[in-house]
Image 1 (cartoon, helix red, strand yellow):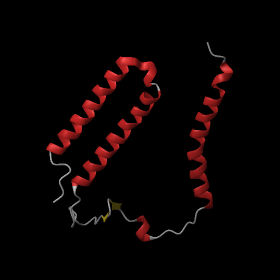
Image 2 (tube, one colour):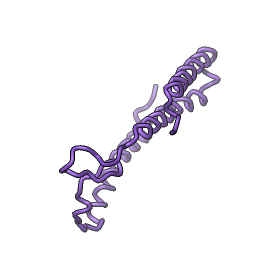
Image 3 (spheres, helix red, strand yellow):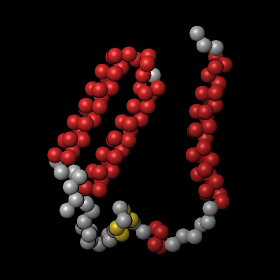
Length: 123
């Protein structure tokens, strides 16, 4: 099997990955400028300033942008699964090839469904 010392690089990488965000946030807090402003503290969402006296926005946020962004994230994450498959393609054999064709078919079906729903049509 494996010697326990072979896991030391993995452990060091995990510790480093866990510490980097804390180090960066602390450095930003200690070294960053602190100039409070009423505009910076105001409620802000999706490019629109929120008026607390009104219940609705004066401009509408189009859902199409959010749907396209979600589809991009979906296909981007799915593409991540293709790289390990491509690296180990020879060892997976026919079963691996069949599984990837099924995986690609599901992705293409999702893309076809999104296109039929008119997600990619811009008016």
